[in-house]
Amino acid sequence: MNTPATKFFFSDTDAEITLHAAALIIAEAYRALAAHKRFSLVLAGGNSPRLLYTHLAEGVTTELLERYGLPVPEKIPKNNHILLQLPRNTRLFTGDERCVPISHSDSNYRMITETLLPKSGIPEDHLIRMDGENSDTELAAREYETAIRLFFHAEAIPLREGFPIFDLVVLGLGTDGHTASLFADNAEALQEKRRWVIAVNAPKAKPPGKRLTITLPVINNAANVLFFTPGNEKKRLAEKIFFEQEKSVPASYVKPKNGNLFWFTTSKFSPPIQARMNEPDTNQESDLQQLPE
Image (cartoon, rainbow, N blue to C red; front, top):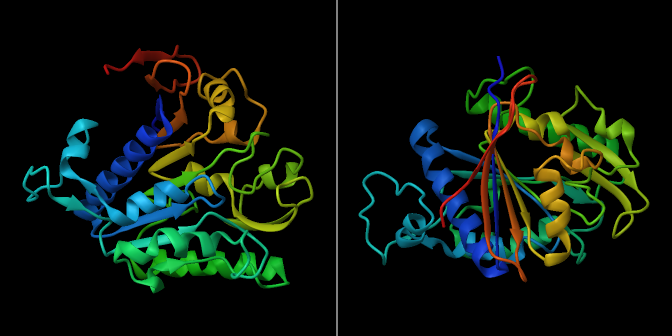
């Protein structure tokens, strides 16, 4: 039986939401480490998460965790000067990839290796990436799905309803409402119910071209999903999706079955917003609460 997701919406300055999101990811990493000795993190691509990944690589202080009401890991002194980085036993995965060489400026793998890996202390072989250089994109999709399956099998992590349970998935949001490489004009990709990874053609994307992406069932099976959408131009769309005023774009289909959904957006010209909503069962009303500052 599925447990309704709890949704959180945080809107503040770019600097503040970046720190908050980094702190939340690291807090969740240590929670996962305590529960099952490893943390599986799926990373968004594009330019938006660059600063977030830099903060993750550098780490956050325990003071920052406390500021946002996040748990300080057990056996870690509550000392303002203690820096927490992602645990070494973090396994990184790419959520989507542009089909370009890794030297290309549009390569998500390149962006991750430039921002997250250099200072994080996470070994490079802990990043399981999509093969965007493979001209046979269908084969590349199958090979990446196999790599995920092998990881979950090796770690003895059971599947749920035939899909992996990632500890946390980071997503971006396009101005057209796409997320990962799931676009509104590709109904087949949005309706995929069986596969974990697919190849898509995105002629209207920026940049246009072939891509690889995880599917909606994989995203919605995660323990935590985090939308990181800096930039004031996406704030209104993010709000409409969160409050279910917009239900037609791909990002609105992200509804974790048994997990939490976090939205981080920019509030450049309006007061910060913090909201929590328990996503209802079919016949229940929404429980919307304004969180304290």
